[in-house]
Length: 181
Picture 1 (tube, helix red, strand yellow):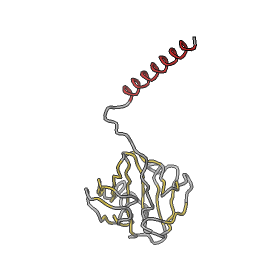
Picture 2 (picture 1 turned 180 degrees about the vertical axis):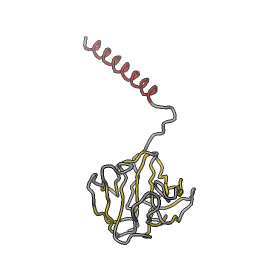
Picture 3 (picture 1 turned 90 degrees about the horizontal axis):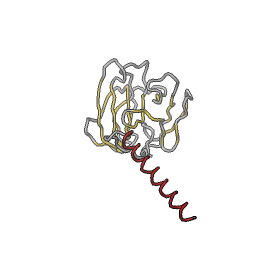
């Protein structure tokens, strides 16, 4: 009798597993790429600099972070992590204005917007801490700051700097950069 119960249980588990695989195959698109764990991403500023991270409801996109400090126009913006520059664009007075997207692999990328200048080109490989541009106020911006996103594909994620998550929706949170220290 005990052997019969185990045989039935094994058959049931096998049937459930087959059903789950069939459901996953029909729900997931064939072109879906697996996403790996996020790479370590540091502050996009020089070592030792303290910046205020601003998050707020109504921000677009919601999980973006605006970094600001006094007299920051023209300050160096550096790569949060190594990767390949996949986008260098200038939308003029609209949206992000002058911006950069860096692909870090595994589905992860970062976006840096409202830049006053860009110091990299599309297709270029960059290292963590390498200067990529300068803080500006281009696009739909009300003053100098860096608009920053960590994304999977084009979907913004909650920003984590080193191992410290940015608090949402804490209007002003200070962070000191450890990038390149």
